[in-house]
Image 1 (cartoon, helix red, strand yellow):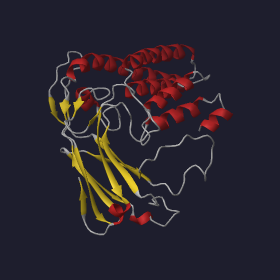
Image 2 (cartoon, one colour):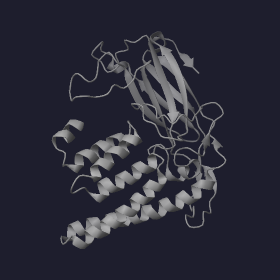
Image 3 (cartoon, helix red, strand yellow):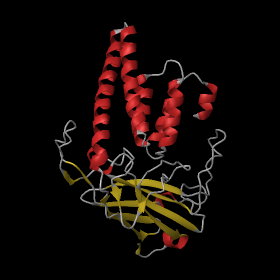
Image 4 (cartoon, helix red, strand yellow):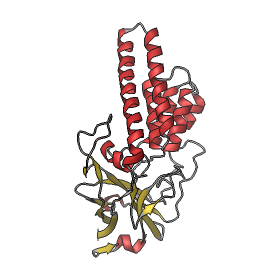
Length: 312
């Protein structure tokens, strides 16, 4: 996509698509999402709903709340300005719909910015834990627990009146890769040479319901030697299980009302990670980010063993 942008620098959709790729699963690299949405706004004829709204959401995921509020205000002004100059009824309706969305998001973000300053304290211990069970060669079950709470239905954004209840809907991420693997920088486009078939990477997610999660990961069906997706040529592997409160795909709004924009309302006595580093990215960093994460180191024998084995 960067090559496409270099060859078509005045096509805002390319910048927006690359920004969204960074924003959404599985990458979840919010600093890069912000960067590319900002680039898209500098291109002529950018779409306010796609680019402008996207940048506001990326700011939120990156913990830049005041910038998000300012961006929503900017989007409202841009929608209003464009509505005045549009004569086509269909285009005008689309712009008006975008205006309503931006206005609603501005009101909600300002209110949540006010209340979350106090609602997220003191941090809530989520009692996170995870284990890995090998049930067959190249078949792992990742399971564990995490306690999440959120605002009950009826949370009043105007007064801040609320009550906390146990909440479903959060998700944990799971990533298995060669120990020591670092995502290399991409300098050119290639359909065949950028991904080495000797590198093993598996990433998935699991829903947390009733305070527990479980995911069966069957990599045995894809094992076809050195040409497979999971070649398992390295001697050891790192498996990480983590919960990122800043990830909008992992945290519903009512849970974020308690856990905060970047996990300022989250703690854990065993697995809190306040480094600000976002797992599974090429070094993405969000200041103040608090996640919970557990790391396992597995040998090749651990993955290919035939008996049932539990890793804690």
